[in-house]
Length: 130
Image (cartoon, rainbow, N blue to C red):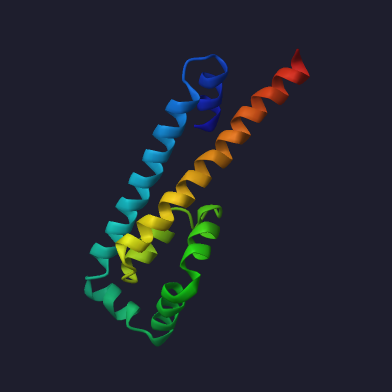
């Protein structure tokens, strides 16, 4: 998908602003839905049993006290954890307002990071082949 966005941007079919708005909105929407899925499934009996383990309580306390932002930031850049961290946080009972405040900053950083790769990649390609 990034290749398609890069091609559209290079051919002036889409603006930088449109990429930022759509990528940021999609990231927030997707992670919010994942968070809500985690909240929904945390009420299921099988998941409740798993979440009642003492280690889960200590992990929840660590995330709530000082590790939430770092956990979310690192998880965003690891392939297998990216779609799962919001589900996990929702199922652990992390407050939504804390999740969304951190997610706003992390999603913006995520979008700008990959956008810079697209833009600079196009510049490097043009420099090599022109």
